[in-house]
Length: 255
Picture 1 (cartoon, one colour):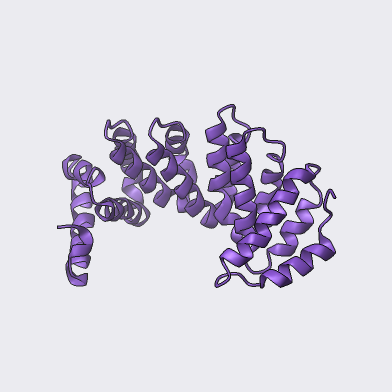
Picture 2: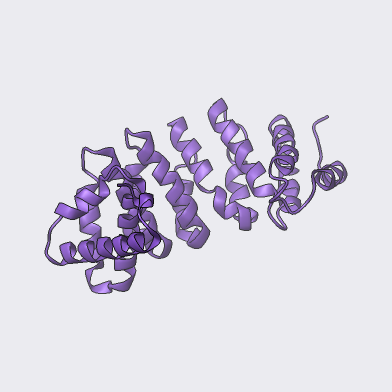
């Protein structure tokens, strides 16, 4: 029976049980049940496990180093689900204490499995929204990495911070404006669109794009900005027409 086949009360009880079991195993220097939870086929069991790690870590300062040592052991697991869950757990810790888990992201960013790397992206988004200084400083180290997938993952990972503070990530995105790999360029354009439709962001995005010298790319980004305001019509602050009117007045196109 999967997590969401259970009643609401049963799910709540199971989450409590997972947290208590993990806490007990940490105290007893055991990894048996933790490894089982981290490798469970059910996504929501794994989610409960990594969220439990975050809660235990933040509530128990005396065992924080021990918790990190558990993640260090689990990140070497052969099962990609275990490694994926480790990165998600590290993301929970990194919301407040990124330096303690930075080395896990250095490792996860180059994992052979795409699910683990995607967990890195998701965790960067989550941590960057709450702990931007440390996370963006780390991300900047990999912005021009020789591996195109690393550049793409970093670009995608910093997106969420940009939705509330576009000024924090636009200078980093600008450094990628002459990116030669289509997959990375497409992610860059996508991220610009995603940060444009939130309250107060459009003007900041357009003003910054005006300072870029690759106008072919910024024209594509502006097309994406306009399109996003139609695709996300129920979530965008402005209508597509209002966006088009604003862009026609303020954006410096190459044409």
